[in-house]
Every structure is written in structure tokens, then in C-alpha cells.
Length: 449
Image 1: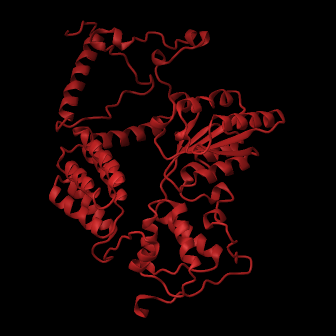
Image 2: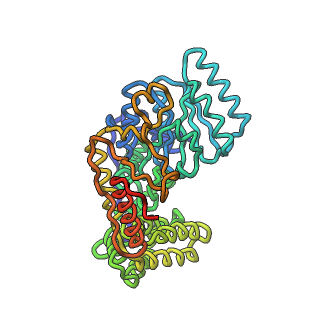
């Protein structure tokens, strides 16, 4: 077996750098960030220009919902937020807590507020609380008893009450990419004082197997470091030890990125035969089926869009089917989704419109919407013209007022331009109908009803 291994040279550390792993303390806990700047892969929110970075700089927090995949740093960010502004930290898991537990926590937070110290209440898996439990937070958020920071892996728009969402800002955390996961492994090696016993290809496979989950990667690394191997493992040997399927690619011809690119372009080119072939190649190589489902869902959105809205439904249904059946039975649903997306009519109109809208939003700054569509809950706002001249569309002929909805200082821009393929052909006709009515309204003519 010697030809399957490469020697592992020990890392050289100074005395200050050597940190033996404490017994019974997980590696993921040892490597928990000490400062927000230590959080890996989330600089878009923790950096000085990110929403969390700005809050910390201002010394004032508002309630947040941290939305992201497992192992992306949600708990660490919440703890560091509390430390950064001198708040006491209280953590609750929605899986193990009920109404009685929450009442005790609310009373404790109120007591500390009376003593002059505010609480940051962190709710892990907040989407698991029911509507009544979520509603119980509202008065305490409003009166400042605590700042709520919720963590969820589910889309907050579906998982959380509108009332709660209106009082908390949603912060999206990124799935950790290959570079971020690689940095985590380097930190694990530094703190343990030893290199991981894997060759270069096995290291890449280990990172890929984590699927963006930093905690999972560190748990796998801890297993390997505890084995005290003196030889490095190949990909098949690593898979055997960790009992997890590892992607194995010929790095010269059939690498991960080459095949996913081929799959994407085959789908875009409406070639289901080639798409199914590349999908199968990746499954045979050991690629994570959930990774392929994510990419297919992206293709359904980017390459098909509203030309066939069911393409997205097929991908989501395939995900649910795969999670129910597992491999290999569930992989048939992935193949069905792949063929459906590949054979669907193609349109990138939504993709282009979104990119243009994001660019326009960045360029236009904070211009206000026109006053007629702004609510006027106070007398002063009414005097300033908020809501004046607004027409409730359902009360108008054809349920269409033809009012202007663009900011007064921003000329209207046509962002979404549907194609004439698939379902978007009907959307094109519908938009033409609305535009005809809009011009008729401007002329003061009645509708064509």
C-alpha cells in the first residue's frame, strides 16, 4: 500500500503557536471566531461596509434574522455581536424550548434591562416556532426588552410571520466556498499542530464533501487528526474511513468544473441527451446529488425563467423526492428535472432584468417613491402629500389605474422584456394590454371593456 501514500512532513510551530486540542472539546468549538473579522466567508455582512459591520461601528443593534445554510457562522456572529456592543447573550433553541421557557427568558431580560443592561436573545432554528410563539416576541422587541437575532436555514418569507419580519432585518449568509473551507482546514492544522493525513486530491474531495458547511468539515477533520496517521490517504481510502461518497474526477480531463459547465451549457442549448449524460457522469464520479439539484434549480431560473414556470417546480419537487428516497432511487427524480429543464423553452429575460434592476438600484441611491403611493399614517404626512391622488386599482375599470409608480426623479426604465417563447409569449401580450390601457388612461379615454 506504500505507493498509495505520500509522506506527511510535520508542520513547524513556535511555542506560542502550539495549541494541543483540549480533551472533550470539539475542534469546531476551539476554532469558533473570537472577533467578527475572524468569521470566514461572510465579509459582505461583517465587513465595515456590511450591515453587521455598520451596526457594530455605530454601537447600536437592531433585530436581525440570519438566514443561511448550516455551518456558515450564524451562532458565532450572534455571540460576537453581543460582545461587540456589551450586551448580555442569551441563547435558545426553538427545537427544545416552549412557551414556559420563553416566559422565563423574557422576565430575565426585563430584569437585566431594569439594571441597565440590554439582552441579545439568539433563537436558533427560529422557523420551528409556531405563529403564536413568534408573536410572543413582538411586544418585547418593540419596548426594547431585548434585541432579537434569529437563525434559520429556511426562507424567512415562508417560515416566519410577516409581523416578525417587519420588525427584523433579514441578513443572508453565504454558503462557504472552496477558498473559505480551505482556510478553515488550515486553521485546524495550525491549532492542532499537525497536517491532515490526506493527499492533494483527497483534500479537495474532503472540502467538496462538506457542501459549504464549515462545522461539518471541521468535524470530519477532527476524526482524521485523531487517527494520528503517518501516511496520507487517497480519495477512495478517505471515503472508506469517513463513510461518505467522495467525488473522484480525472483532474486532467473530467474535473468538477468542466463537467458542471458542460451540463449547464447542454441545458441552455436544449440538448437533453447531452445534459443527461453529463449529469450521469457527475453522479458516477460521486458528486453530491444535492449540489446537482442546486445547479439545476439555478438553470431553471436563469435559462428558462417565466418561459416555463414549471421548470422551477420540477427542480424543487426533485429535491423533495431525493430527500425522501435518497440514493440511488431519488436520483431518477434529478434526471427527470434535468430533462425537463433542458427541453423547456428558454428565456434569460428575468436574469437580465434582475441584473439591470440591481445596477439601477445601486446607481439611483435612496430616491423616494412618488408621494401618491406612500402611506400617510400621520396628519403631518398627509399634509406633505403622502397618499394624495392614489387610486385603488381594484376599484378602477379593468382593475387598472394606470398610475405612475416610479420615483419622480428617476425616469421609468423597461427592465423586464419577455421573449415570445413559451409562457412568456402570453406575458408579452399581457404587458401590451396594460400599456394600451395606460396610454388610454393618460388620454382620459375609458377602457375598452
